[in-house]
Length: 107
Length: 122
Image (cartoon, rainbow over all chains, first blue to last red; front, side):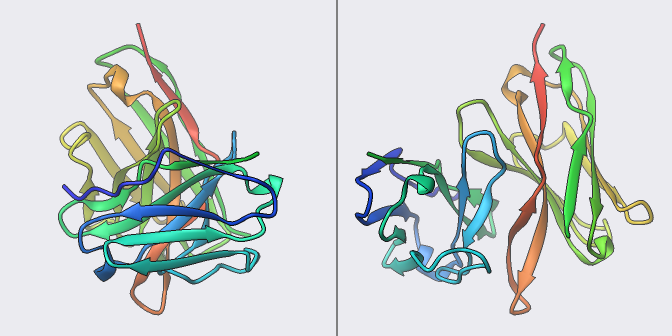
C-alpha cells in the first residue's frame, strides 16, 4: 500500500515561515492536496493539485513539489494558522491516501 | 451553499452494527462521487470508502472491506455507510465528504461534513 510520510510536529514563531513536508514514492507524478484541521472542526482543503489555492485561502499558504517530497509553506505565520495539516494523494493500489498529519504549533 | 449532514453515530458494542447517513444539499448530488473518511481519537485521517456518482462503483479501504457497505439514494440526496462486525478499532469520527472535480480530472475532498462519532465499546 502507498504511504505518505509527514513530520508529527512543526513549531514556528509568529511572522516566520513554516514548511510542512509530505514524502511518498513517486509523489511527483501524483496531484497532492493539503487539508487544514483546527481543533474540534472538520478538515478544510487549503491547497489542491500541488499548488492551487481554493478561494478564500490566503496567499501566505502555498504548495510545491520536488523529487519525492511535497511541501506546504505558510509564510508570515499567524496564531490562527495553528492546526493539523494533512497531505493526500490518490493511488491506484490504495485509492485515497492521507499522510499521518503534522501539528503546527505557533510559539 | 453546499451542506453535508451526517447522522447515525453512537455507542455500539463490539461485534455490533450501525448505519450512518449523510444528507446532502446545495449541489446536484447525483453528479458527484462521495466518500467517507474517519478519524480515530487523536489520530490522523483515514479514507474508508467511496461511491461513484450513480452508485454503480464502490471502493473500500482494506481495513473495512467485507464489513462496511457504502450506498447512496440519489432521489433523496443521501449517502449511507452500513457498518457491521464493529471492533474497538472502528471508534472514530466519521466524515461525509464530497469529491470535487477541477480541470476535468483532478479530484479532492471539499467540503466535509461536521462528522458523527462512532464509539465501539462494551
